[in-house]
Image (cartoon, rainbow, N blue to C red; front, side, top):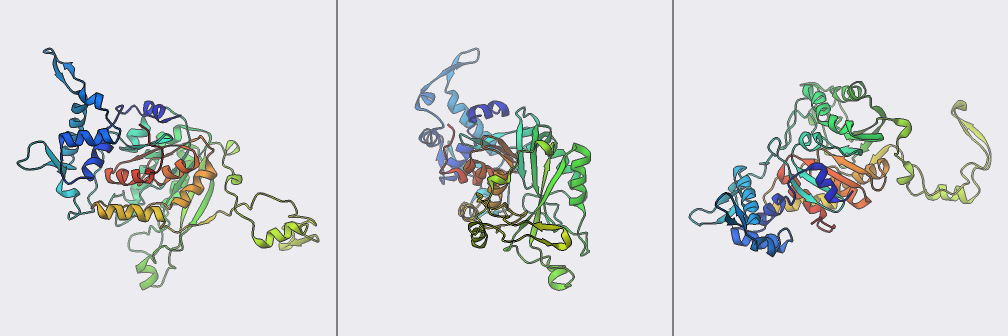
Amino acid sequence: MAFEAMSKILNPTQGDLFAPVLQAYMGAEVLSNDQLYETLVESGHLTRSELDTRTPVGKAGTEHCMAKTRVRWYQVEMKARGIIERVPEQRGQWRLAAGMHEDADATKLTPARPGVMHIGTSTDLGVAIWGSCLDVFGGLEESIAVCITSPPYPLAKARAYGNVTVHEWVDWICRHLEPIIKRLVPGGSLAVNVSNDVFEPGLPSRSTYRERFVIAMEDRFGLHKMDEKIWQNESKAPGPYQWASRKRMQLNTGYEPVYVFCNDPLKSFASNQRVLQPHSAEHLRLIQGGGEKRARTNSDGAYRIRQGAFSNETAGRIPKNVLSFGHADKENRRLQALARRQGLPPHGASMPLALAIFLVQFLSRPGDLVVDPFGGTLTTAKACEMLGRLWLASEIMAEYVYLGGHRFDDCNLAA
């Protein structure tokens, strides 16, 4: 399914120019309308022929350039959202609004309005939509193989993109995941990264919201819990400060769970053969030496090893379900630097690309459609692009979609 087919599924306006128009303004201090049109021609989003074509409109048949009309519609949309503004006393001159400049508040985010969707970026394999996941996936008719996502955690002190309270979170996440769960193919998977570090108000005891989430997935949607993978993050900041560093009642946190669900476990197409890891030098010597030299029994008979075991050569070892990845990576740092240069709010909780790559490879097959309803800066989407999976991501904040689009600077972008 190429980008054109994906566009028909989503049914956004063909030739959506929101992202290229926004990028044009972000790349210049001031743009006249003519300069904007030329920029869009140079980037391949408009043709010279479209700019030269005039079409009769209305009863009077007055001729207008429909391409320029489309561009001006996006200008009106961005002006209404406070993204761009007219330059005072300069006719036809536009610039990024004051709130979008480097000297402005770099925490301001621009949410999509309900029911409005724009193509943020697209490649031959997928598309990212600026819009609510309820709008994007609520009308989707295509079958989904896998959903991999990291939704906003129910934190007491919300990040810039906000979150609901811990008491609302389970109902909220169920409502947002329901359209996707309904479209999962038999054997399809849902992987959700949540936080283990949500505490009861004023107490050193953890909330049971994630346990209630797991039960809700079973009770409401009939999903089966396949695993609770541990994402171990050695570079995670020390905390919780109050209960670990001051009161000394807790240990510093070091992991987050990634729950994996399946609608039909016996048909699951997850495969550990896609994520095999290299054998240790010791194990390779064991294989080369013909395996175990004698039979033995360990753990009071619970674990038996036969003579000759581990003598067969294999492609690698099966990973354990404790996954060690630092939260910082080269690409995230590049996007953070880009955000600082352009005065945009950086995403403070991006999933590491290595974790996304592992989950995409383990849970999906080449050519599968993988979705992420809380796309952020499009980490899951980039992992899919690297591994040859079709992808669809939604993100409600315009700045994150824009930054995430730069993950694909070296990819084959769809026309």
